[in-house]
Length: 116
Image (cartoon, rainbow, N blue to C red; front, top):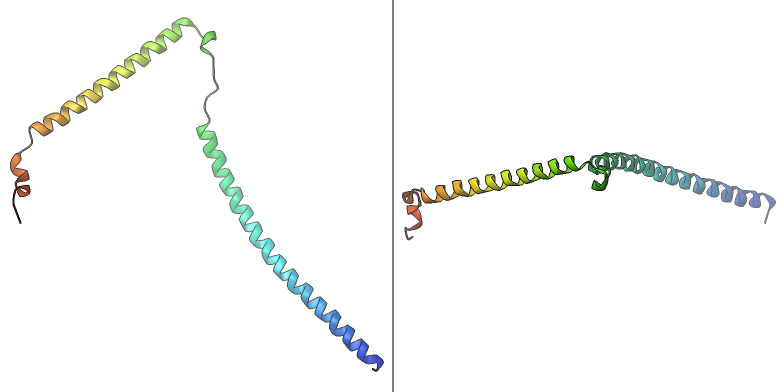
């Protein structure tokens, strides 16, 4: 084999390797760009989640042992009054529904009695 055939073989091998490396570089660049886009989306979602977590955070616990007795008594009385008001509102709503059922016009349901 002549000496220049070795140069051609090695030249083709080097050019093939460089082409393959360029192809891999383009492939890797595209993957990195896609990963960067996903990271930015993830950062936005993490920001939304942190805002929602702040909104859902409970106030710090304060033991009632150290609170003033009169304040605790007032809070308990207020809670009792709130429950009584809610109970009365539910009772009033039940009475209104019952009155609607009692005073319903039966002629509006006459189509239910007709046979097809």
